[in-house]
Image (cartoon, rainbow over all chains, first blue to last red; front, side, top):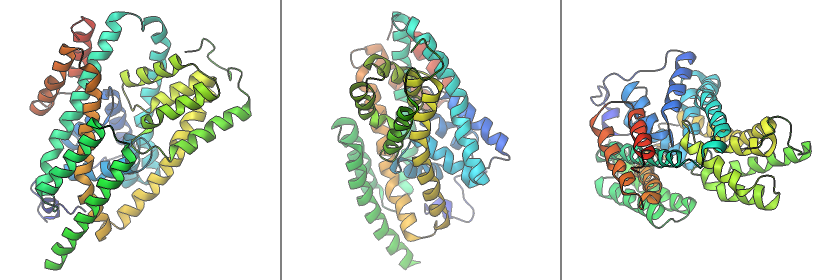
Length: 205
Length: 185
């Protein structure tokens, strides 16, 4: 259940055919494929796969899961996989999704580590790593840009939302303030403002 | 990486437990992912215990970033450098188990109370913060590229590719690697 207006609608328009994983095997394969595409971070690919291709989550559900994953300790994508797996197949699903996320990449990372010693000084390798880093940065920015339009439907209103986006991006990305304090201050402000807005909306019925 | 693949690399079992315990402690502090704790891990492993050197530590992070999959795998590589497969098990179990148990419980609580005002205010109130943090991450990753103009061009090119096409991001990763390897980046 989401509180965003168009998902609360009994005949939702924004996500006509939301689906669900049919088996733990399908869950495992999907998360393995997702992880294997995730160079320099998995979050951008997670949005692409889970929201756009598989349609296992709406944009709103994706951001809800991501919000929770970000404020809880631990790697965001692992937290997200865990909660998604649990939602569909209980604790076994949680283990399946996390295993899918980690198993195949672990072998690749170990193999790369064995090669790295010999090739790290080759300039082409260093250049390729830098180019891939640039693409990883673009992937994450694109994910943020794709999710941003959903804020137009956020009950807090567009201006407060825009203010929080700008403040959090500026404080962490530009000023490099410690994440914990930024999340506490802006998270709490957003929570209180949303609480007040939702209380008013509920009273109005 | 160490040439000795298996065995504990001279670490005692008690030290291995200590390693797992320290990472378990860090696990619950890892808001924003384990990478935010990299400086503390470096202090503990390199400076305090001397189990690995600073170059091994930096290489672990670089490799995990370049490889597909969650960046948390740098913790697996660090553990492997310290004490082989058992070291990897110690650091990964330490960093993953406490935070995962907490996430599992909070996730269930949230789902059970999904109609409560507090839970809905959480989803609505934190949505813009979540998007802001994504933008910040992308920005921070792009910063070291300022000295490399062609790399910088790859950033907007990737954004356009992702917004305008439905193709797999792997294509852009391949383009980035190629441009970089040819010396363009």
